[in-house]
Amino acid sequence: MTVFGSLRYDYYQNESEHTTLDDFSTKSDTRLNPAFGITIEPLDGLQIFSSYTSGWRPPSLRETAVNQAGGVSPNPNLRPETSSNIEVGINLLRNDVIQAGDRLGFKAVYFHNTYDDYVIRERFVDPDGFWRYQWGNIDKAKFNGYEFSASYDSTKFFASAGLTLYSQATFCREKEANLITLILPAGCGADRVAFDYGVMNVPPKYSGNVTAGFNLLEEKLTLGSRVYFFGERYGGFQWHTGSSTEAPYYHPGAIVDLFGSYKFNDDVALDFSVENVGDRYYLDPLSTGLVPAPGRSFKMSFSTRF
Image (cartoon, rainbow, N blue to C red; front, side, top):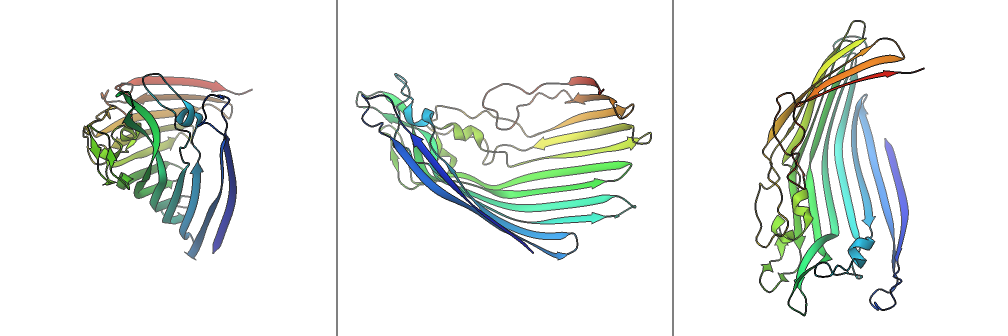
């Protein structure tokens, strides 16, 4: 059994030189961020582990001090964002499974990440009746899910795969937000951050990759393929009432790459690849703009060391 723990002390201070802005007096705070975990190995090559990590993100100068005419108002009273991250999982490692010298690995993890006082971009009506933006805190954001990975490696053949599944990705408000022309109710949902960029950063329901290849000619030549796949945004695509930043829509897809290399000797190598073999038109998940990923691309590089 292995046990680890740590304690980190964090401190921040924001100080304004604008003597005319009374609200911008010095802001500072401190926090102790613990981390601890335990790993148990009931059988040789099998590990069961769990960990807890606490984090802290003080507000940035952009969030607290930017004052853009007709657009963004500063918020010197913005609170730091804190996180609580829990992981529980297993690791399995086996040697000499099919043939001598090979290696098989598998890992499965459940993660539960909660962010308190989550910082988002809010919208409000100023005393002159104009819409403006300001960075503010909501109660929390939650991202939970599962990660799986597996790999096999031998002298002639190698393969690996990874998969991430989200079971929750949401934002929560303790209190109703009354924006005069729009009311955002208390509770959880993507619509609770309709004015924020965070709607664009909601991850796909699932994403993953599979890689496989061969080592030939006494391991001088390597040939392989990689498949990258992803689903639609968690919760689907939706235009939320009052949104000022629309999250781009992307279709579920699978992108295939081919790659290879030839090692002439210890110091000279040639690498080549064909990426997006099917020349698919697609947007990468979490794209913040309507800029498509590259189409079919051929790449080659030659390296030498002397």
